[in-house]
Structure formats: C-alpha cells, structure tokens
Length: 57
Image (cartoon, rainbow, N blue to C red):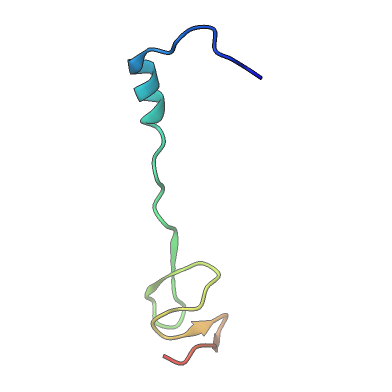
C-alpha cells in the first residue's frame, strides 16, 4: 500500500480538492417539441422517444 512520505501542506490539499467540480448535466433538444431533455430518455414534455409516442402526457 502506498503511504506518503511527508505530510501534505494545507494549501496543497485545498488546491487539489478545488478541482473536484460537479459537471453540468448534458441535455439535448427534443426533436418533436424542442424542449431540453436528457439523452437516451423519453421527453417529459411531449412523451416521445426515438420518433414514437411512449408516454401518455
């Protein structure tokens, strides 16, 4: 198991942790109603997926 030889300073620790950022959710425009939706999911506004109606909205 790898063990650090020296204690990492507070500034080094905080600058390393500063790069842990959450990424924004990628959305696509629905081809039917043009509202933003998640990729590979049915549209929550019009209920279509892959050109056909799959949800009753």
